[in-house]
Structure formats: structure tokens, C-alpha cells
Amino acid sequence: MRLRVRRRAAALLLLAVVLALPQGCASRWRAAQERASSPLPRGTLPEALAAQPIAVLPFVNATGQPLRMPQGLLTEASRAVGRTVAEPSTTVPDRLQERAGVELERRGFRVVPLEQVRAAVPHALEPPLAGAGAAASAGLDGPVLVGTLRRFTVTESGLLLVRLELALVDAKRQEILWTGIAKRPVPIQSALTWQEILLDAGGPIFAEAFGSP
Image 1 (tube, rainbow, N blue to C red):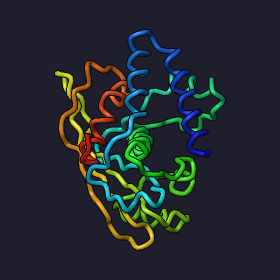
Image 2 (cartoon, rainbow, N blue to C red):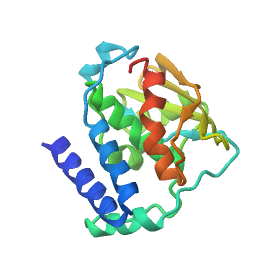
Image 3 (cartoon, rainbow, N blue to C red):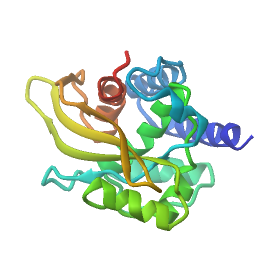
């Protein structure tokens, strides 16, 4: 039931954004919603971890750039569906953290609600095991997904150069269970904003990292 409520809220937020966008951009958001709802194979992710919900911890920004998201459109959309806006400086790693949870669910894994994770571990910690330790101390002692974004650069030819390193860690035992990486350039179809870039590139980034289409 909780998962259904979260998906309904996400759909309402997406609808509010679509209504505020020009027609071409709105079509892109609708297409992204359709892609994000389709199931995918688990790839290289350990099947045994499907038995426990995974907590997706805040991703580390190691790019040397702030990568801050413009707040106007998403802020108004959030308010339109009655959601409190408490993140004055949301970043690309924040959105990748959110997308990681969606992509895990598409592959049949349960995830800990993002609000619960951010309340327990509000900021990214380095190295990854430090984040896992903080999660365990806060009561999230199951598997956690940690990530480090080392590159996120758009070229003039319409490619996103990205390097995202991921690891699944047993928070309680401080043991790395799986690692994955996304490092291939991603075509972004002349996207102009960080939101559009993430819409175009989010799926391919996690497909490569998780080892599935």
C-alpha cells in the first residue's frame, strides 16, 4: 500500500510538471514516465538482495562542480500537489539518488522510502563504507546502495560524459556485496536543462551500472 501511495504521489508531481511545460518538453516527460514504469531484468545485481528493502543513500558529488538544479519549475509543481519544498539547493546527485530507487524497483527490488533514508542519513559521506556505517547507526542495517558521481559533463556534440560508481553494502557487517559503474557517453538529444538531461540519460546510466538493458 505504501508503495502504491508513493507512486501515485510521483505521478501527480509528474503531471503537474507536464502541465507547466511547453508541448515538446511535456512529450519528453510523458515518454520518460512510460519508460520508468516498465520492468527490467536484474542484470548483475544479486538476486538474494530482493528479500530485503534496499536503502539508497545520498550520492557523493566528486565532480568538482556544484551541479545544482534550477528550482523554479519543480518547486511550483511540488506545491501544486501539496508537497512541502524543503530542499533549496537540490543537486544532480540528489536526483540520481531518487532515480536509483526507481531503477531498482523496475528490476524487482524493494527500496526503503526516500524520506526515511534522508532523515537517517541526510548528507553523502566518504568513503562509501562511512555512509553504510552511518546508516547502520541510524537503524538502516540492511543492504544500502552508495554512489559516487565523478563526472557529469555535457559536450557541444550532445553527449553526456558521466562516471558513476555504485556499490551495495551490508550496512551492519560493513561488507561490500556488489559494485557497478556507468562510464559510457550518453546521447542526450539536445537537452537544455539538468532535468531534461537526467530524463534522457538516467535510464541508460543505471542500465550500464546495473548490467541490464
